[in-house]
Amino acid sequence: MEKEKQSEPMETRKRVFSGIQPSGNTHIGNLLGAIRHWAAHQTESDNLYCVVDMHAITVYQDPAALKKHTREMAGLLLAAGISPEHSILFVQSHVSAHAELAWIMNCVIPMGWMSRMTQFKEKSKNRENVSVGLFAYPALMAADILLYQTHQVPVGEDQKQHVELARDTAQRFNNLYGETFTIPEPVIATTAARIMSLDDPTKKMSKSSERADSAIMLLDSPDVIRKKIKRAQTDSLTGIEFDPQRSGLYNLLTLFESVTGMTRPQIEDHFAGKGYGALKSELGEAMVEYLRPLQTRYAEFTDDPATLDKILADGAAKARPLAEKTLKMVKDRVGLG
Image (tube, rainbow, N blue to C red):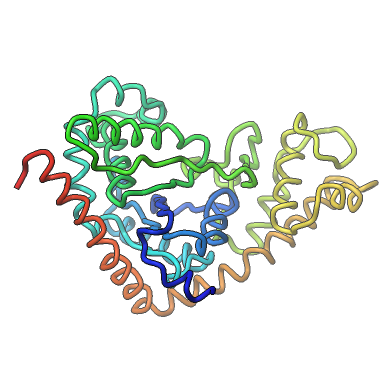
């Protein structure tokens, strides 16, 4: 029965799409909040996971660094468990239909909708010469999703607005030109850990933070991991317990829970009568061991660039006909070609 289920055509199963930028700063929050859930559920649906390098250039990127970070991101996804046997992994710019559909979406989405996108306001703060691309990138994100007739988009709460824009855009296009796009649903994992900054636990751990100690990067060395956790912000109170009001402690305990698999009562019993020193020391060692297999697998991919190149080329070759099928239908609907 299992073999029969695996051989079903893609159209009979839910299709899942998600993308991640090649920032070069992939951290433990990205892994625990998103990537490991992608890997854990990839046999349940037909999945497309995309390194969205065209989103990255909405702000200036050093060209050599962008290429390096794109490959690094793909290697990390594979090392984290994304399997080419169960998922299509590819680079956004390798499938030109993304850019073509994005222009058509730009011509469908009203300015008012785009102006309400909160992330543009955040990302354009303190920037001179903000690009049109940064303002319009939600149209590209909508195109990414709609291009594959996506049913589900796993996202964090902060990205839900972009999926809602994709939904609204799909419905507007369908109303104007006839049924064309599947209406996607955002999927927010209720079990995903929300990991906060180590040095300011009131803020989410972020790729864009300029403070080196704020996040544990997936490729940090064991010594760097231990030092960052040792420096993590806590409070002057005593007792180790899951109290959301004690944000620094709560964040460290959430990390400990996520990387050890222990339950909250087990963790509180384990640290009963102990202080922050014991928690930080044990968390440091647990984090090092948790990331060790990922770092080992990542090194294997970087030591064999031909294999990584082949996986990405094969992924693009699988994604391309799916994308072009939708693009052809869209162009026919609007009268292009």
